[in-house]
Length: 515
Image (cartoon, rainbow, N blue to C red; front, side, top):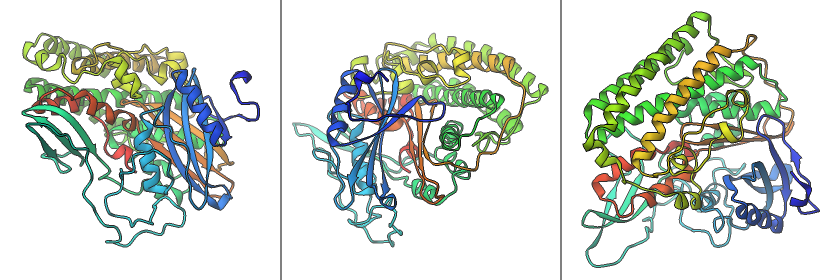
């Protein structure tokens, strides 16, 4: 980082590992000054979280990771011990708003000017209970009390509310959607999430880092390879572990296969919501065959426990490599035929075009990431702009569409399937020889970041540890934190019956941002 970009009394330290990040301790003035500067540079807030570091004498600590001017920057602020607080960032980065609310819900760390409504609290914890504090021993049932959530009212002639969820008429996770409408037109949508809290972050405090990967890989089953990969990268960084090249290439293969599996499933679901049952069944069949291959070659349909700290847990022989390459060639032909059918289907295109539109300016202002950002014309993809091995060799082609509507998000999914198939073919052709795993069970202390461009966007894992095995802290960040507010914006002016289609075109995670 150029020295003239830094306050003179600050020291930045380059973190080990494949994510090229610098870390610094800052005070409140520097925290705000840096955030203002990075925002002015067009920087993007990746994650905002807190940790209880009272055992180390630092009180409560707030952390922010920002990518600005192509550089990863992780700043940490000691927020105090008795009344922890910090300067808000949500006036600069909108995506910080819900993370600031979660900081108070989980740790009791507050900031001036924030939305004081609970985000993850649903009455399970008492007013003085903060589950991520080190001395939190668990609140007995009934400790907390549930109060009506103060949704923002919309006034006017003919305005009424429609409440949907948190329980839905399908096998999906819980989330509440409060619509303010006139007739069928949506004037406002307000989401209420936080019904899937599982205590993952708390559980990770007491687990050896080498064992935490199994739990992290189960945070969100549709992204298990990306979560496990980001966690492994962070643990390897604090362990000075050098992962064999063959393992790195196999990880990329798993991430691309996970991306394809989810895009196939989403395309089928979008066909179903758009009224083309044929597409739903065809894409469902393709996804099922894809997952069966996972189970046969990697031991799990959703790739759980394949990526581990130190490498991967299984290898491919020449027969398996030939099978995977042939499967990719077949899928490419079939997907192209299905895309032609979808593109020529007037009824489906009428539903897709213009629905749930989010233009580039809106998406950029709200901090959109991942597929949703690329479908609004924003060039955002870690595989391209911050490539870790082997992506620095593979030269990923970014998939972007300017439309910002359901049609654009469908088109990006098709583009990414084709690009992932190309990457997989290249990986299989160039797969290095050698071992696939090395020991990684001796953390040496310090901080480590892991980041993977998952199929929804950037999944980040931050690990802070000392030489004491009980003092580490793990933070996991899902891109849905950034993208859930996009849905609220995208449905304005749309009709209520189009909400399932628009919602599916984003397909955001409930569990991923509620740990």
